[in-house]
Each structure stands twice: as structure tokens, then as C-alpha cells.
Length: 208
Image (cartoon, rainbow, N blue to C red):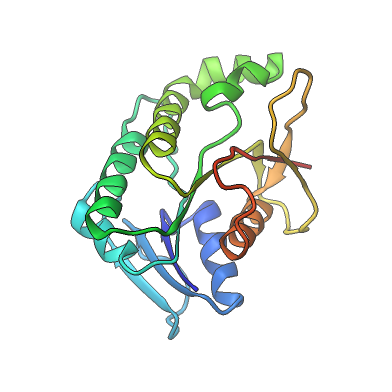
């Protein structure tokens, strides 16, 4: 399959790219920094911005699946997630794409906020409120502007090994526990959904 990864230079995006290549897929990456993976026949790099329509078009045109794995390191207000979503949706409309769109946000975005534990709500209020407000807007735009999407909401991310064993929670219920999961296992889930998208129109939460 032809896979585009937007935000591929680090974290889950880098893990997704490595795993997809290992599984024999053709991967085009879009990131500001060069993706630190050796050159290979099935890897194409686009160095650019997720908020530049020409860069986005160069990365996603002809893709069977698009994985959005953008992240920010700062707790300050941002519009990266919503701005990039608007541009991506416009490009998909202009190119007539029907690619599977799998977008990474996090548990705490959108309506999942109310189901977080009290300590996590405190953490979000202190450190993550602004970025997650924009992730919530990203979710709203994607769900309302495209027909073939999944929005992936992992719990607290770790640098642990890939296990392939984790829980996928499709429904929000009182008392649910969404804790830690490794970036590698989130990548495992996202690539599996590229190959067999069982969560279309859903917001799967991931945790151990």
C-alpha cells in the first residue's frame, strides 16, 4: 500500500514510518526535519510543513492511507492541529482522494476529557489545556469534513517496547481506565488499521 505520514520525524510518526517500511509498504513522509531513516526504495521524503498546501499535496497525492501524527513540545496555545486539518481536508477535496485517514490526538481530546481520572484532569489543566483545545478542534474538523476517518486517542505515552498487546476501547464509559501505552504500540495499532481499518468513524482509545 501507499502510505503518507504527516509528522514523521520523531515519536509515533517515526515509529509508524519504520514499521510500515518493515512490512513492505511504500511510505511518503512529510516533516520539517529530515526523517532519520536510511534511504531505501520505498521511502520518499517531503521536507516541508503540514500547514503548506503544496507540501501536503506532494505528500498525500496517490496515497491509499494517510496517517497524521503531528505533535508539539510546548504547552502554549497552538493552531497547528486545526490549521493542518483544514489544509489537509482542502487538499483531499481538490484531489478527489478517498484515502483512509487516521489521525492521532490523545485521550483527553474532544468528549473524552470528561472520562479522564482526576489526576489526569489536573495535569491537563496545568500543562496540556491549550494544545488539547486545538486537538479537539482538529477532531471536530476531521469528523465533520471527511467520510473515511479514524481518530486514535492513546493514553499517556511511554518509550517502551512494542508488545502488540494492548486494549482498544471504542466506547466512552464512566469509570474507564486509560493509562500508559508505548509509542511503538500506538504505531503498531495505526499500521494495523491501515491494513485493515476496523475503526472507521470511531475514536479508539489505546491503553494497556
